[in-house]
Length: 187
Image (cartoon, rainbow, N blue to C red; front, side, top):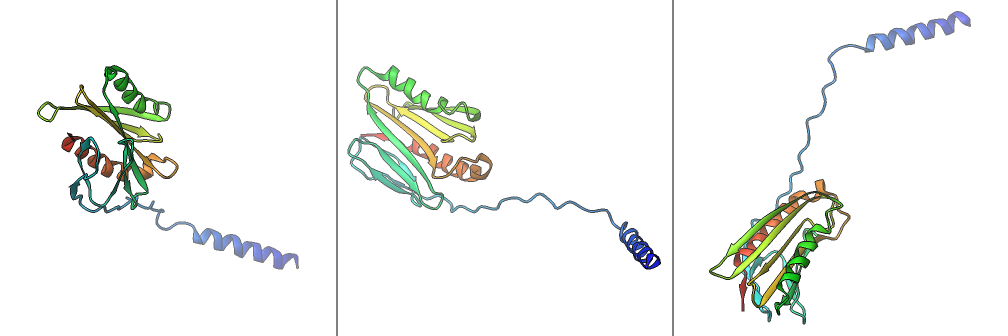
């Protein structure tokens, strides 16, 4: 019995050693997430608001009584919230509030980029902020004519922020938000 056990252990060790060797293991290549978004086609916001702009027709616009509005992206489970304020000797405070909107996310942000926007012909002046990291909102902007109108916008996803996962969607909607600023017209 002792010899049988010794023979079994010997065969097991011999089999184990024989199975070692050969080609070295090769790691799997990095996978890339392939998200395909439709090419944006823009249409004008046709609501009873003191402003209008072009937005992606794959999204849905909703206007509220207080001149705020929202643009929903059901495919991305995201929404852009727009807030309108009339300028009445309070432009400085509105600008501070518009900047605070982005910098309140500073605790969770890895970086915040500022992209100024100036269009004197349409009297649109503003700033587009890109927030990198696991912040609640990754893109915001404010725009004003500096005399009557002030508009802020912020993008939110209906899920816990995980920047690496939502980055392609953030980039897609960020282009739409820039298009909103470019096409913004005051009524």
